[in-house]
Image (cartoon, rainbow, N blue to C red; front, side):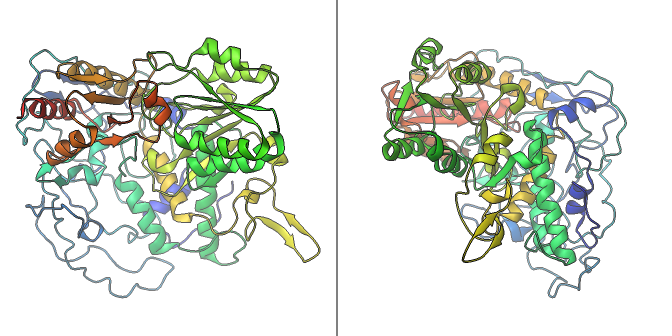
Length: 597
């Protein structure tokens, strides 16, 4: 994509537009940090040393999140702020290329944030001292170079009872190869390839708030992930300096908005390993992507007597659309059974495949069991029978690298909000020959070439599937999220999460009456469990009182729970910014619940 001239854009957007195309984890691997960060896990603390030569981690400065973004949220207790209230918004002059925004001299309450005081073990709230979108262009503000302030002990404000056995060591991933110089301009952040959970945490403002008087422990990442400041700033900057509809506009703002939107498409293609941005369709999320495939490709290719194979572990979003299609076309949805440990029964899968099979719909990672199926092998086997394969990547994309070409998926879908991006935006990858043969799902503006009452011709893919005004700011946020995530070594993130999962399983095993569902050898850091004598909702409510957010219920995966004879469970789902100390708090709270009368 050729980026047009952009003037008057705020710094976060300029950084995104000015960046060279990169390939996600491969980019991180090509330019790792010059040093390493090592965390040694003991039964009481995590000691972390900054990587030599990496400078400051993102957001290491002692600053606060603007109160305008957080004021009025329920449960936001007022506590002392990390820095005094300055009262004025710094550096809010007119954005170059635009007229001055009225009323931006001072904003009441922009000093401290209710409930955003320094949690024990956290040095400061991440750097968001300037209102997003008000920095002048060209250029970026300097990345802080102060020494990294890292916690030396686990948070102790809730006085948890730590497990009595020696916890598993959780090594912080390191990057061993030599960095290569690069001129690529990215959002302010760590040197490409460095990773530690502390680096990620300092970028995520909401992780520094209080819930019921306790520091938040966010273990509901399977439902949605929290957003780094780079995403928050990019979305705010778009509305502050580049808001316009996209495509066809002749004015500067339209060109800028279009450039951002299409840069987001290119970034998604890079992130998924897709050959071309033209193979990426923007949708509201995984659910809409699956419905799009069902209503377009499915209606044209699935008919009476055909089979749609769907494993029992699937999310409802990957079951219900196929049931609806099958009911209308007289096809069959055929469940693929699970083994006791939560793996897909591969022998049963092979037996169920036949010349009648038109589609296999499978999750890249289960949202309730964490199971990671052998998707590439399942796809290759399906292709022998001429069947297509749709992969639901909603739970996978935030946890490990994805390469749609390597797995040879015909369709791949994911949601941005599970990838540190805003809600209401997601993407569908499809092979170009499939997109070319698919008819539009919805009609309207933006998806046509010409319209008359005699004849309408449609735009080429992917635009023919994007009727109306899309979620432009959501694409901007997704672009920023991908840039932020790819600033870390994705392989290192996956390794860290695997170690954290192993530690969590060992620690939870010490809670009497707790049973974890599933034990597949390949899995992401998702832990669904039951606690003897306690309803799952009651467990979640008790944990919430201690500042710990987990999910309870059927998790939109009732067939998977039914496999274990259940209709409800508690789920703790981990992400790259979670820590062993947070696992300790979860275990201590559960032990207190079990010991309570």
